[in-house]
Length: 330
Image (cartoon, rainbow, N blue to C red; front, side):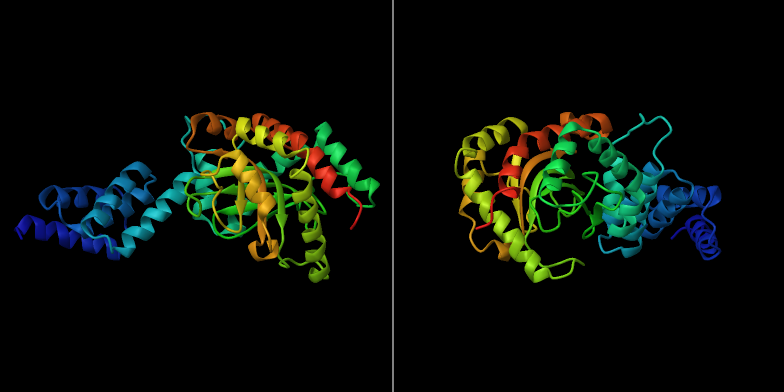
């Protein structure tokens, strides 16, 4: 090692021990990597310094270089996660205002623990739910539930959305835990292959949750799901197939990604043929928007456009829902 490189390394180590990650650290470590491009530690220190100076793109480049030299570098891996998180929480000043859900919001969902992501995204989600509450279809759903003794003056209340595992937040209509749910869900990537949003009808067939008498609740929702299978196997079968084909509808079961490999007719056939639904725990049918598709990203980023997607989906699925919800027992 040359005397110049030894001197720079000694200075860089002193600054790191002192917790100094400013312009001087950047200058010294840039000089090190210019002399020794394979110096993994210098690239890591450089990434840390860029992070602290909020030069996020430079930080990502430096840390990726460190990881290319040593994929097991846990410090660089941790710093790279922190860069993505901080960059998501501080969008560039030139960014177009987003009222819905864009890359920043889905990155928050990916990087923060689910409860923290839920809290951070609460204003966006609540604003969307409030917009949906003003629609005529929301009023029709509420009135249908009221006719059958259910309570709730709005379709979605302030506490109608919940954190799930990391990378997943879901919402369902107020009082809908043991019912066919008008459901929305936000997923980052991971856990799903693509960051996405779903809206449609869902059935939570597990006993999980804080509601009293979960055994009775599970039996109730299983009965609803049986009615759902009968409804979509009859007159509504072709209507549902056609709607899924024209709007990008897919089914989802258990914790699997949306079944994008199933054509709509096969997807509906799959729904009808499900037996022992409690073992799956979750069944969903509805529309999906994927962040990596430009046309979908445009809808996701604009609250009013996204609310129209939700409204149109609920309006289309309402006859199926009411046929299931209002059907006589037995």
